[in-house]
Amino acid sequence: MEKTLNLTLKVWKQNGPREKGRFETYKVSNISVDSSFLEMMDILNEQLINEGKEPVAFDHDCREGICGMCSLYINGRPHGPDDDVTTCQLHMRKFKDGETIIIEPWRSAGFPVIKDLIVDRTAFDKIIAAGGYVSVNTGGVPDANALPIPKPDADEAMDAASCIGCGACVAACKNGSAMLFVSAKVSQLALLPQGRVEAARRAKNMVARMDELGFGNCTNTGACEVECPKGISLSNISRLNREFLTAKIKD
Image (cartoon, rainbow, N blue to C red; front, side, top):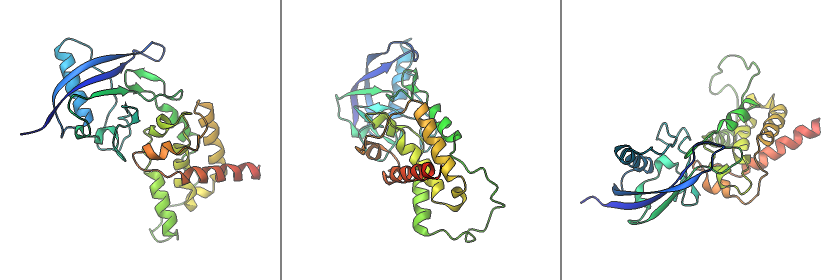
């Protein structure tokens, strides 16, 4: 017989960034332990719609841990009580029957609430637009072995590029810092020859944009690395600091 859960959900409800929010309490029953957290939220919303009530607004897209949109703060942890997973990959077997689950949006000045559990994460897009790309003409697509890149550098660049921009690092940080995100996007290009041409401009512009958008300073506690669903390393922050300092010295 399939194991199911009866749960109490305390869900943050807020009509907009300038509205006062509050917690609403809901009950859900017979939730399969094999269902994902977002499937449980779907069941809750179906229940609310059938009762003639407004459903809970939450963000999602791929439900495969790729897009980074399913950003929820669950029982005090970004993406919930599991390691190296996004909310859509979190399964209900991580919870106990009769448990109360507190569900909130990201808490950061850089991520204003749009509605309920949905926050505006376009600040990350603005940081990328400030320099997270290669704009110089690097010629046609070369053969895979034409540019000699040491394997350790290629591996580090790929690890940094695995960042999905979900914002868990910001949510985990006491200061709401976006340093882990920015450092990952700088590192994935700084480690490759194609990215070196614009390295100084990239580091300065992306850090400046991050500060303009209201993200705080790095706390050096490492909470961002612990809660990152893709395991982005703190070593990238060290690399960002070196890139930024080098750029300032050149000025």
